[in-house]
Length: 432
Image 1 (cartoon, rainbow, N blue to C red):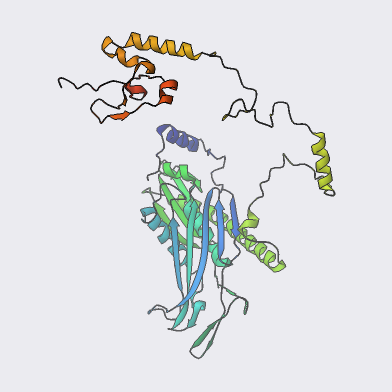
Image 2 (tube, rainbow, N blue to C red):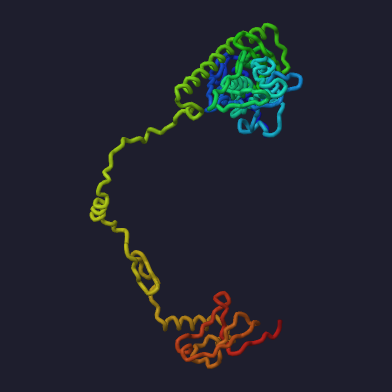
């Protein structure tokens, strides 16, 4: 899925604000967003929040065979993933151009700068070395992925502890954390990336661009530097031409920002170390703010639970059911039941004689003369009663009994009311 493009009005608004040296989130030109570093319960796990951009870093290790050209050095592997959970513009399973560029820049920043002593990861020369794998997952995308990923990678590597090992001859023993304390990695320096966005062919620049500012920028300059002001990586993208003074100015700003971020990482590591040593609570769950609803809070009141049955019977004896409720159903006739008084019959009562007269009148007026003999009462009919569903089906002849003649009159209904007919003889159709 492609990301939704910016409208012309929004694009012009952003560019006009940058020209007036204003930003939509209220920051100044060289201001960074708030950075929050949280470590997990296990070593080497951390979450870095750069504004609303969130990156999860996880470091793992395993014993592998070293490379043929470097038998005494360990292996470093970095992997950054951009999932569709972070932004609908990212597609899972297909490495995009942005992902390839970020992974290469991350490897140049951390592995090629020799920030970790890889020789200390050797267990047996030419046989076994430690492979350190750094997995970075983008949880939410709000701009400046590279800076957040570099901070998360450095913080996770500083927080990671590998298992202790011992070598006796050709036998290598790996100790669990309960047997021996894990060993931290040997880190020489901490390179941090700082991104600069340029607008109007380098006339204006912003530090730490967000997602909307990245859409309207003309070019991007990334400088990786440590707190000793040693430049590790410089990469420019976007096809803009920068002057020497612009690069120097960006490097000075990057030196200040890297020193602040490095101090923040060290403080987060020191706080986590103190909490673990004191046995306090630590991890992601402890860093989340408690969100409680206190508007409906009431004071606790004691409840006496002694003699509950006696009190319940007393309450029930004093209570009376409401007048609307009828506890027993009212039976008005056999085979019927009703709750409540109900309403009387509004149709009135009709006598049997009136019903028979109305039936006779209806049958005599609606049927022709050829069929009037069928509508006669049952007393005048001495032949058999014929019940037929259709004129062409089989005819069932029922002999009338004494009770049927006395009680049940012969009725005629049309096909829609049951398709019953009474006739002396079945007339055949003369023409079809």
